[in-house]
Length: 311
Image (cartoon, rainbow, N blue to C red):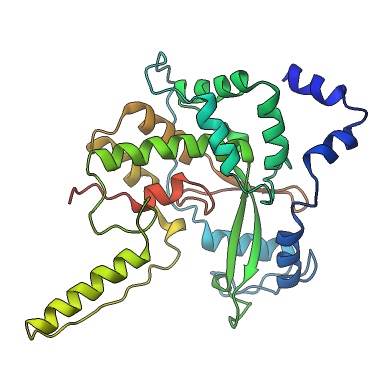
């Protein structure tokens, strides 16, 4: 960190340093979206809570919505003290550089306020130390607590009764630091699951080289085959409500253990899930939740797509 601090200090001023990193207002589009949806901070409809009463303040409304979307009814998973003795595939400077290059620099930052452009600058100052930091996190199966904190913006769903918590779509704003470590782990987990055939052959979402177009083609082929053979085709459509926020942490970890996934990935995924929270300094919110994965992370879709039964 001393070298990062020195880099900032030698700039003519901190503002000039930032001006070199942020050429434009990176967050304009996102904040415009939120501002258009929820007009002013502190204004939110009274919400019907679970006991049948109406919330009386913005903070109470926010808490009621968070409790709906981020359940607390699951016991936490215990973190282990781990030292893998560097027996895992190291992240490389090239890999992290590629992750940084692929990042959308216009994304809003997490609670720490450090946007991707600033983290990119820190990486450029000393790429080896930056990479060493990520590898040390993996070696000790540590996903730092500050990197697991999220800010949440609530986007009202069009045409819904805004007095109900289900009428809001929570958008998690995550730490850029955490996004990088998350991406490193996700790549390794997906690669291992694909290699060992642990993802179902009909799983199209959240997989490289697959999309809804592949699923539609499979469905079309099935219908065509049925018509040729003069069979009747029936289709059932299911929509899983609140899928991301309903993932049971213990089920994920148990499935990884049962399928023999590498220990460093099991331990790291365990700590990635454990002790996640939503914070808001203005509302004095420090909200821990006990199941689900934040939308916007990479390990979230990976765990959601994971099926422990081989095809």
